[in-house]
Image 1 (cartoon, helix red, strand yellow):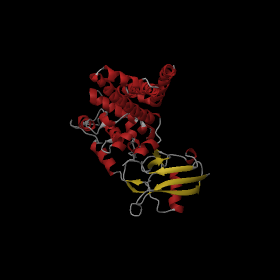
Image 2 (cartoon, one colour; image 1 turned 90 degrees about the vertical axis):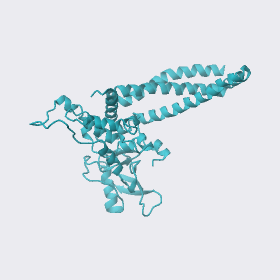
Image 3 (tube, helix red, strand yellow; image 1 turned 180 degrees about the horizontal axis):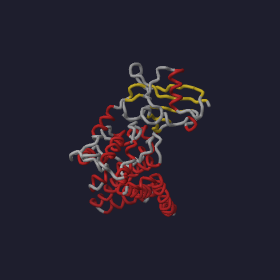
Image 4 (cartoon, chains in turn red, green; image 1 turned 45 degrees about the horizontal axis):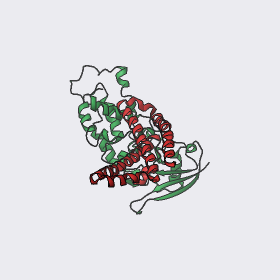
Length: 124
Length: 232
């Protein structure tokens, strides 16, 4: 059977890395959602506990985590749209690498300014 | 040029684990990797085992993992591989010895998609005619040589060896989109099952690996669409 590290050592090109990132960001977003369900559920035990949980999110390390989360959501969304387009218009596969690069460029254009604004907020 | 070949060796009768054999040889930059492997086998170590037949990219015998990516040893030139070249057997198949892998399960899946002409209607008096346009519909998927480079580059196949795999889908596509064939429904039923086309995650490793330049992911996508919309 193929060992886990062999998934990383196969020298695939843009498509393989996009797939791997899609998985990683998907798991990242899922983990956040699980935590988010727990913290929202705290409201059931009254506002004091809920506010305490929310205060944790305002710690600098969580603020940086929020930037990462925004990155995960953005990449997963953009790449997801790429996959949907390929699925419904298979002829677009002729330029398959370019689609991945387009996702990369679009991600950078949206994410970099967003991250700067979010991190400025942390520094304040 | 001087070339070092690092070949993943494994003899199940003697070795408990695979090991790397290193072979230094003098070769021309325009030699193919297959020439270098032949040199090792003929002059340095006769126990090295691998498949090769036509040596011209047609028979599909010598697909292997070359510098980390699948390719045919008879189609890559040494000048494009650097001075140290790693050669491993294709991933996901059982290794019989060295670079020789057991492809029986691979061909079993190929047979599963009924890769032959199926008709129910009576035979016409002359040949079954086809327009140029209808012939072009499946031109790309006629080129497959069943080397296994696509299937063994696919992470979906690595994760689930029951996945029918890109090669079998390509060969099913060749008949599904043939206007003369009447076995479309049988094949689509097989490909629509849990281990059929839906395991494809459009990773494109198959497209990058195919030595015949087949747009495998497009073929798989067209089969997916055929399953969804029954349009051909």
